[in-house]
Image (cartoon, rainbow, N blue to C red; front, top):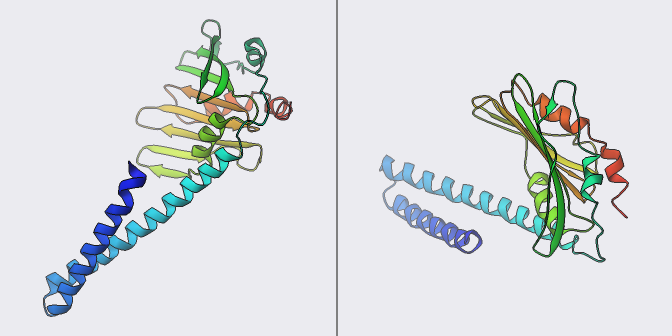
Length: 224
């Protein structure tokens, strides 16, 4: 719906801008008309910038997905192997056993494990998903992270995680009002990791969870 209607909306705004521009030329002595003309031109320019930026993102996502079309059958890890990657911290106590889920979506199979944690101050959880090699599902998930940027939006701070590592693409988010932290991380074109924590003063706990996963071992499975 967005890709169909946004160009039409932009053309409509541009048309209105041209009409208002012509109206302003006929009554140059009217300051209200001149201000309206300037606002219309500025709005048209902003719409053009937004449209061009969105096109760039869509093209990048499409190219990323295209390069990840499965070229061979993927071998997924057994759930017990994924459990070996789960992090354990001294200040967190595991809450129950890891939960396992297997499934298939958009032609891509996956297996995931989720471990819950608790402490005196709050709760946390982490999910590790194996999409296998050359997965379109991984490409779609990672593209969202790859094209997002560091930002401060009110009480929410979003930052890159380990951006210097070409085998990783990730973001951490902290909401100071809700005292909630989260992290999303793509690893070696195959694994996707999600971490959440409640009652936090920062995103440090979710970063610690990610830091305590053997990411280097995961990277060695990329070409298997």
